[in-house]
Length: 311
Image (tube, rainbow, N blue to C red; front, side, top):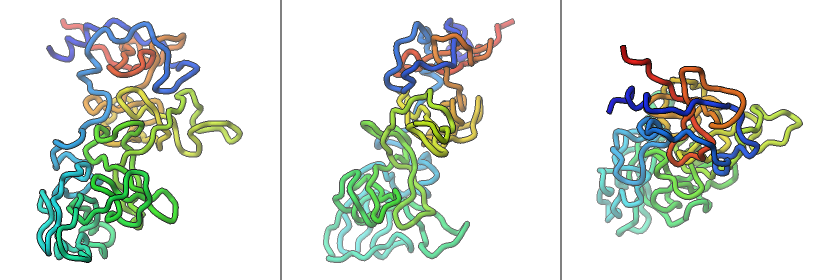
């Protein structure tokens, strides 16, 4: 059935942009409608991709030219004595420039897929990113690290502003790689401040009713340049640097922060305005309805355009 016909099935119009007093993505009270059709399921609100099975040419561009998926802990086979890296043809110890490494004791050494620069001495536009197999460690998620070789497979050594890095799960395939109370964000690699990669970050479950920007004398979960935004298909929230995308602007939803404050990304239809099913003030225009995606709290939805009637 074409999308235009599906849009004609919807019957719940947007009633409000005034979010409940709770306002958090995960605890909004039940609304009185918004799920009468299947529009949102086709639109695809939420992240794309998931663990394993993602095409290498569809990875987040910040993961570079990929010979393997950094999200996949089993992407690389162990190194042997001077042999090649694992699946995906990654760099071995004597391999491509920026991704070679000192093997230490020769023998079988575990490897993982890591993002790095093809040439560590490059400058400006000559700095090409690649994802390839490198020696790996055993440090778990949220443990400290000094290099990618410290973190277990599937984890990046990220810089969060301390004297050591922190191992965080990659989400080069999109937010589907993030599990538990996390979402796909981004952070610089430790020791390489100009090299930002997508990684899973903890949710804040902030309130969407928080003012943005936070007043100087205000008490907000999200402060400074951060705004509370919906970052997962289930409506949960986190403090993010909002982008500039508004209604209909293109977005990929591989990571958060492409759309402006008050909008959420649909890779199919672009940035969509967040609305509330119940309330007194309408944020959606007269030719739109407010519909709640599957998995969203039923009081929260997005403004969806109605198709013109067929002649």
